[in-house]
Amino acid sequence: MSDMDRNTRLNKFEKRRKTTKSITILLIAGAFLIVVLLAFWLFGGGSDETDNAAEEPMEESSEIIINDDSKSNDESNNNTEKDEEAAEDESESTTPDEEEDTASDNEEVETEPAEPSDDNVAEAYVGEWEPVGTEQTGPHTTTYDEGSADREEMKQAVSVATGLATTDMIEWWYENGGDQKVIATVSDKAQTATYRVFITWIDGEGWQPTKVEKLIENDRKS
Image (cartoon, rainbow, N blue to C red; front, side, top):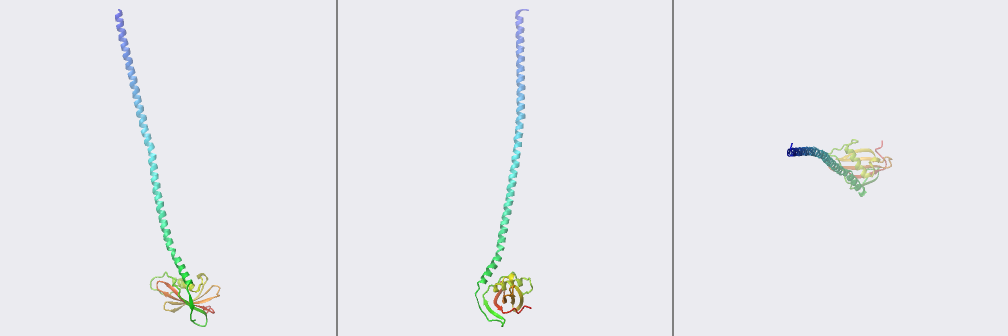
C-alpha cells in the first residue's frame, strides 16, 4: 500500500473519530440540559406549592382575627346592654330616695297646738305634712287589712307624723274618721308613748297626716 493511501485512511478515521466525539459531547450536553430543566421544573413547582401551603395558615389566622373581633363586638354590645340596665336600675332606685326626701320634709314641718278630742289627750298639735305617696291607682277604697297597700301606706303616714319608726311601732287600732279619713292609735314597742293620729286620703298622692294627739293612756289596749 502506498503512503498516500495510508494517509487518506488515517484522515478519514480521524474525521470519523472527531465526528463521533462531537456527537457524544452534544448528547451529553443535551442530556445535562434536560436534567437541569427537569430539576428546575420539579423544584420550582414544589416551591410554588410550598409557598401556597405557607399562605394557607395566614388565611386561617386572618379568619381567627375576624372571629375575635366579632366576639369583642358581642362583648362590647353585652357590656353596653348591662350599662343600660344598670342605668335603668339606678333610675328605678330613685323612688326610695324620693320617699326619704318626703320623710325629711315632714320632719321639718312646723306644728302648732290644737284642740284635744277628749280628756285622755295630753298634747294635741296640727301641721302641714305632705302626703306620703302611694302605689295605688284608680278609685280609692279604704282597706284596713293588715299587709295591704292601703294599710302599709297608712302606717307610713302615721310614722312621719309621730316620728316613730315603722319598725318600732305597735298598731293598736284603725277606725273610720269620715269620708276617706282614718284615725289610728299607735305606740312605740316599749309602750312609753301612745299617739292618736288623724290622716286623710289625697287622690294620687296618698295618705296625709293632719293632726296628732299624744294620749295620757292607751285607750285601745285590751
